[in-house]
Amino acid sequence: MADEPAFSHPTRTYERDGMRVLWEPRLCIHSGRCVQALPDVFKPKDKPWVQLENAPSNDAVADAVHRCPTGALRYERTDGGEPEAERMPEPPFAVPYKDGPLLVRGVVEVRGPDGEIQRRVERVAFCRCGASENKPYCDGSHRKAGFKADGITGVPKDLG
Image 1: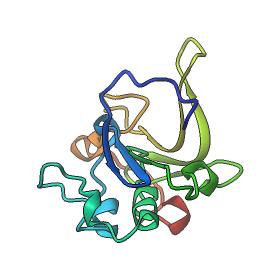
Image 2: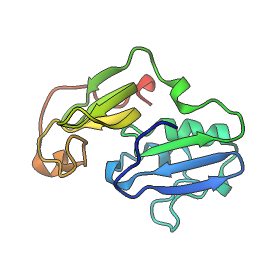
Image 3: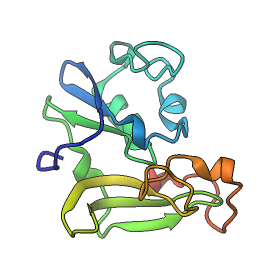
């Protein structure tokens, strides 16, 4: 989002005419939803792994990025297309993922212990297992930790 506080962690940027995709690796839990949506664009074994030149359209890229459950992938439209924040539900909602994170959709502010806004996000996955080294965000550690908890299975369409 335009008024989002600066990140203290690296964000990689990939661009094509009218579209910018931002990837924040520390938030990625490798769900593969982007790869499933556009396998010719999101190629985890290649460098660079995001190849926007292979995308059929900016709308297709936006749809694929919107499927990312953690917000590790974001996009900015410079072609007048619909901004990501306008695709978000009102009010925001959260759903626990079976044996995994708490998935949140909708524009929310994440605040630190001091009450200061750390970031504004449209999609985020919060740690529920306590094992993440990137708290409050999920880093996928629940898999190694053997975390078990009730929740949804699969990611419903309205969650990305």
